[in-house]
Image (cartoon, rainbow, N blue to C red; front, top):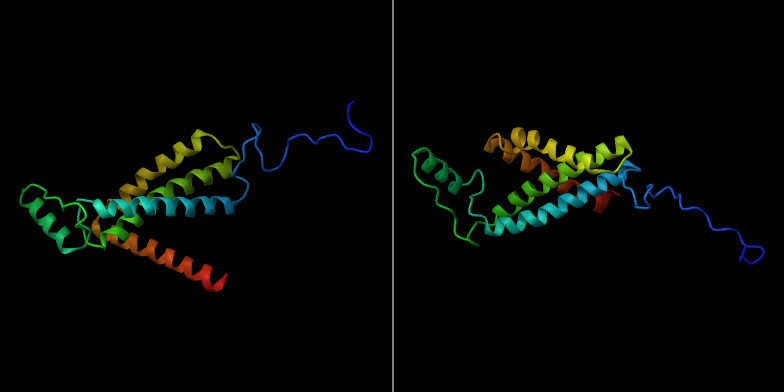
Length: 168
């Protein structure tokens, strides 16, 4: 033994925050699930805001959307909005849409990971599989439901910011 006297041998690497392979795990508490969800919502919101700047589709509930629906009902071809000419209301609507998709996938994935106590690809696949019903029954069901969804998510974000600023 090459150790000087009065020193302890090094501890084995079985820290509570590491997995069997030495990688950090994120399934230790519900706080990490919420943190990952909020992070992915913000991440998706940035992507959605960028898409909102260049999107060729009108915002649901606006006059341009109603005109496009009427034209489609008459059998006319879709006329996209020119790049960078979409109204500013398109940016938050798309930011909430993209942010909620990424947040829902991450929340489902990390919740399954927390329940299973294992970090692998099956958690992400479960999150992606759960996106289809969420998209089909909430986001793509009707314009009314999409507008309601965006109002609920936007209100939740504002409430969270208010809570973090003044009440926490």
